[in-house]
Image 1 (cartoon, rainbow, N blue to C red):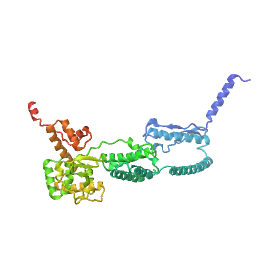
Image 2 (spheres, rainbow, N blue to C red; image 1 turned 180 degrees about the vertical axis):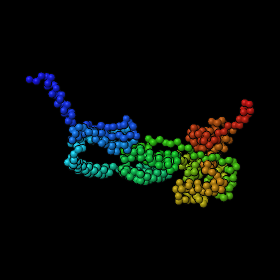
Image 3 (tube, rainbow, N blue to C red; image 1 turned 90 degrees about the vertical axis):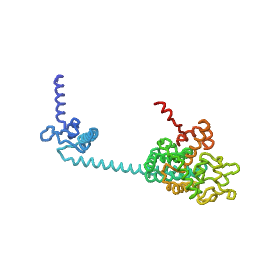
Length: 439
């Protein structure tokens, strides 16, 4: 009968024999202590059938040392180590021909690939059908924006609608080129609109980019209101700080020279300008005036303003004196046309405004060599400044601004004050005496 000591000794010897007969060691990773200038690799030992001893074999580098960071190298070598360990367990022997093992693994891989390809084809077919159903059930992007413009027709002016149409057209063209994958309107997102606004900014200015953002947002909001789009992403895109365009006021000398020159060379343009200077109207508002809008007896004019439907203003006598006899003119004719006062003109108001803007540049700006800071609006600024400085002579600043507000058509005192600040109409009195006293 064996003693307990003999049993334990036998078990220990058996375990020792098993460890000695292990065919290979578990593959390990060599990292050169983190030194990326040295080679990193996977290494292991395999029992040599001739000597019966474990022999360390040539390390496996693969593509690992092409990577320049520790994390990348370690990630690649970890995959190598796991793959090598799997092969060793499947029977890989570096001292024998492994063709049988390779064929076995290759056939298994082909069967798996064939199965994966079949599954992939099925998934692709399902995806294609799903996309087709999606296109059938969702509104196309062009169709959606056309609907948005249609719903805007009766809520905005012709000019504003034209601006919307132009910006939508340009956005859709850009989208076709840069996001051809977008077919339905629900595929639009903030990133698409942000990319487009960046494109506009690169080609123009922050001011123009902000205008595109505002106009497109107005159309998109109609789609949101009608549950065609879930969100108005443009509202979540911030406006950029844009330096406002400012027209300088004319000096008294330049103003007189321009008026005298136009009196001889272009009296129609001169009268057009005087509606800015004396009635404080905007270019587009002057282009809308028809003969019937002027009431000589009451000294008033009725017109469609920029920010309201109809507006009535007093026409000062200085402007009435320059008007020709309107009684013989057709009441429905436009007051201003290219060649005469009171005529029909087959052009929309934007085209009419552009005509006089270009005419002013050619006749006045080019002749007097005026810079980009001077324009038709400069006359409005010039005469508001003159008027305010005359009013302030006889009344307090508040009284002067209140009266000015009635004349210019500003709706709030804050708006008048901002306008006066912008054109530098408010200037302090000469403070030389105070400086002398401070010496």
